Image (cartoon, rainbow, N blue to C red; front, side, top):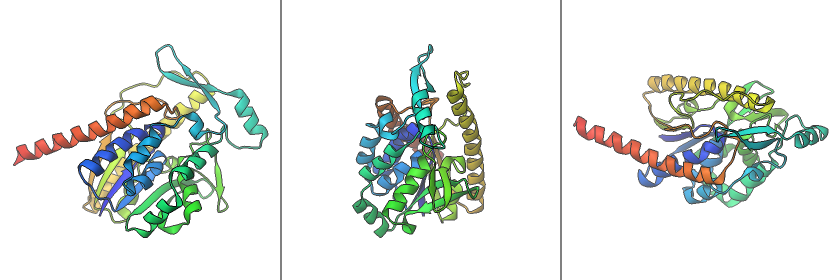
Length: 304
């Protein structure tokens, strides 16, 4: 059984889409299982349907308003040419006055998921042989949960995709089935272990970070940038732990893991959705996968 695993990474999901496009359309990898976390959860249903161009159009046309109905931050350019986020005091205050537990709300993302993943497409996947699994964090029970398309109806599965992407406290916290849920990356950023536990013997893993840390984070300018830096630090630790555990489990199950990291630092803030940059990252991902597999084939030929 072959599986595709895509990590969390916000706007950097465009890079993962490019890598997946090469693996599916150029290498003709036929995946039985798709497991995603956060932005990976947004990609995998379309990839399972082999509707690559459709999800590419989505990822290269979204902006902040596509995600947030109440965005809690403003985007500012710093003196180094990068982008920093600052607090949108009006939106944050309005959100708190409405009784929200988070700084912002991401209801627009839930609408976008429904607009781009139809009931008909859901039925096609559910009736087929492929399994699509999204990762969520159950804050009430303090555990990670994996939600398969085979276990839910259309609206419920859309909820789980949306929940998997909700990067609190900047996005919505969702209460479902009596529990509070948030972004799957808080518990399992790279769910390799889950793919192997579900029977995968070969796992292609797209990790939306560089293999080696190439930068120091810029000094925090405000509480929001401090919070994103803190979240980034924690998620980096979770990601590295997930990969170590995944490699260990793969060794015990004689499974093969192929890792695709980003070759460069794409962004230091994956909450910023820039259409032009995301279109570029998609192409970078496609070309990186092509180059990586060309090099691997050359090595195999030399070894013969």
